[in-house]
Image (tube, rainbow, N blue to C red):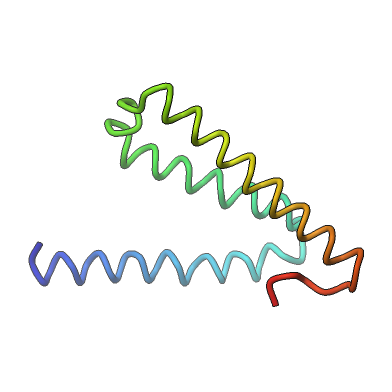
Length: 95
């Protein structure tokens, strides 16, 4: 990778990261937080599938099975700790 390619990648990532904050600021007044998160993940999924389609198509069933297990575990853990922190002391568990 050349220095020019690295700079281009860095600039692209920085612009994408920075514009997400602008869209979050604009959308937070009109759209619910759950919908915003769903849109962000949906857009990220579409972009990643467009970039890495050939690699995703080669994933075997065992990898998909373990990915679903890990995803369910992480989702359950995150939801349970968040709900527990709200019920117990009205503060978020990560701060």
